[in-house]
Amino acid sequence: MEAIMNNNFELQTDIRYQIFISSAFRDLGDKRKDAIKAVVDSGHIPIALERFGASHKKDIIIIEKTIKESQIYIVILGHSYGSRIKGRKKSYTEHEYDIAKKNGLIILPFVMGEKLIKSKRSKLKRNNEEEKKELENEELLSKFYTKVRDEHFYKPWDENTNLEIEISKSLTQLFNDKEESLKIPA
Image 1: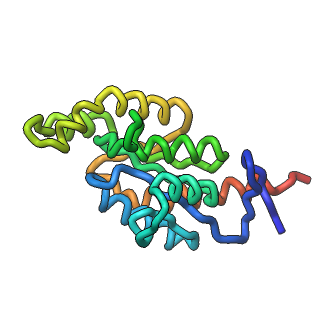
Image 2: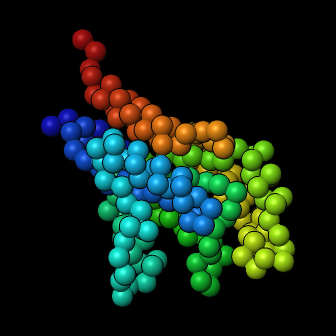
């Protein structure tokens, strides 16, 4: 069986991978659906928390366990920092990213372009409680984006991007690159 080493696990070329999909929920529901479809169409197993049933365990425990059991992590960053973990100054999305990085998962980031981020954030209203909270997360959002951009090659996206196709292309490229690296020149 062919295998490729990547940080903490071997990437096999002939098995299905568990791919964790991460983003802020509220504003990126359609993009998450695109990611799920791309993963399924590529023959792998999408893990998206909205597909989980009710549980007696805390969300954060389920998230951490599920990411640790995954091999690939897709993060879709939009104009929102997203919901923060109760009692922490960190969003679920950033925490998921940190867990994926700590556990050596392959990380595929898709980052909304800065022009679109500014445009969408300019439309947030201070008199709406949820949007006001999001506006207060401006610095946290900026630091998170900088971290992702500095640590990875990422694919920018905007309203005209077909994210399903871009994710499919990235997964295909990932596995083509891995298969190519297995070939030993004569």
